[in-house]
Image (tube, rainbow, N blue to C red):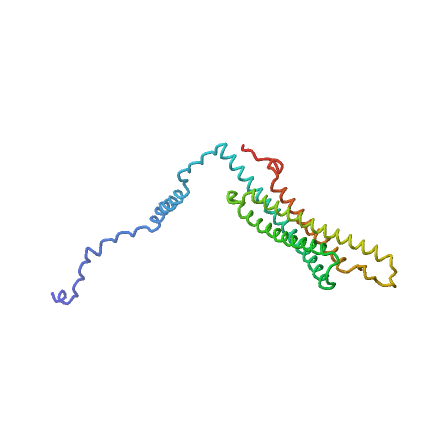
Length: 267
């Protein structure tokens, strides 16, 4: 009895909750493996939707024969405008600078001879050459107008309806041709009169020996007469350059489309 009282008490039995087994943890490898195909499929769907072609656009209606002919005509007119603008620029620049140099030299020679030697022997030669020089300066400004006209034609090449009318361009070229012809005629008359006066003076003064001097009724050969010949020659050259450029531009403007090249026909 005493032994039973002195012995330690027995340990309580384990709780039923502790005896139960914990549920196994879910496998981590199986869930991602199953979700990966679904994610890939979800990612591919937007791509397929983006790559899928939309509704086909309606094709433009074919042009009729009249519209194709009109379009071909506009293309031909634009091409001719570009070519004409290029011709006006090249020939206008060449005529402007060449005429400006020749006319300036002629004006300088005439002014120097008039100031250095006084009055001319024949006033007609002086006035005729001066009129030719004035006409040459006017032709220079008209050549500069060709350069400005080339810029206008180049801007309106894409819109032929806004281009200057061909009748106005032809009229401008014809006025330039008339001006060059009149100025050249005046310069030629002045040079012929100068050459005639020089020949007459040379014949009258050659019969008198140089040591006897010049009599009161004789007129010596003046430097102004010789300078007038050079001034007249430069003026004629200036008008010739302007006339040549104007004639070539008039030919390029008035040339028919059949002579310019084959006309494109609609297929």
